Amino acid sequence: MEGHEKQNKDVSVWCLISMASIPLVMTLGNSMLIPVLPIFEEKVGISSFQSSMVITSYSVASIFLIPIAGYLSDRFGRKMVILPSLILALIGGLIAGYASWKMENPYTWIIIGRVLQGIGASGASPIILPLVGDLYKDDDEKTSSCLGIIETSNTFGKVLSPILGSLFAAFIWFLPFFSISFFSLISIVLVFFFIKVPKEKDEPKKFKDFWQDTKKIFKKEGKWLYTVFLIGVFVMLVLFGVLFFLSDNLEKIHDLHGIKKGLVIAIPLFFLCVSSYVAGKKIKGELPIMKKIIMISLAVLSISLVFVGFTKNRVVLLLVITSLVGIAIGALLPTLDAIITQNIEKEQRGTITSFYMSSRFIGVAAGPPVMSLVMKNHINMTYIISGIIGIGIVLIVMKFISSDKKEAAA
Image (spheres, rainbow, N blue to C red):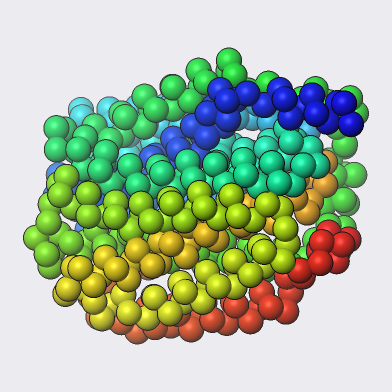
């Protein structure tokens, strides 16, 4: 008990700030570019689909490498994976920025830089979830509260992203790439000095044993884990699809550009941020509350999505609907983080949370290109189908996510 209390005491404010800086930086690294994609199209001479690849290339790299990073963090330590990953994100930003600055046809090198950033993201942000679980041990309430702060930092990054991206691009169109490197450097310094990872007494498991244990977890807990992964894919697909659509819509239909457009996009993201913070405070590690929040949020999200396409010509109504989408997603994110972190043993926590984060990046990767393909002719039908899928996921949650902690974590 004394060791447990000491562990909680050791989690300083600066440690929390350092952990929160990582998802903030990784979010800025992706979301900041969404409002300036039309500028990239003009300056680099690329299509809407090609510009969407600037987001997707970052996310695709993360999808495949996040589970590997999770295993490495379980075996060699969280900090040993986070720091090199942040350095890669910094280098990727420099490559993309320099190519945009000095090259006549920079697109290929921009994508290379973005892939490097995605590799960095795969070993940084996802490792924070198991790290929080390590630091707070078995204190579910403090774990939930801290995860709420971490996810709020993530969503706050989404609020800042369109404003900062538009502001930087107003000075120099490729400045957002360099700014990602600068923010990564700040996070590197904070992590290096302020995150004190608990020392491991046990020898790390061999890969063969680790693989067997991972298969056992998915065999035993697979139904609710796959359900959470599915929600992660759906939520991020919707979020990045809506943001890509909103950025394009505000510019082409409502003639909003630059910082003005960034401020408008930030409105639904602000509601997402507030909702994430409140949800993190409310769940308190209680599975019945988590399940209720997941079901209500998915229902609100699904109903709201149906109306997005129909409000595209009325900016106020569009912002009301997308703000409801933001509120629902904001409540879901820390709840999903907590339900995974608190129901998986520490030895496999890094790996399982990494599979979950990988599923989220599938949605991030798919959202912009899917939306770029359907925006012209099928926008209303796309959002209606998305709403129907969301209701279907609510039914899956009812069946496969238990309200009983013993059942869910058996």
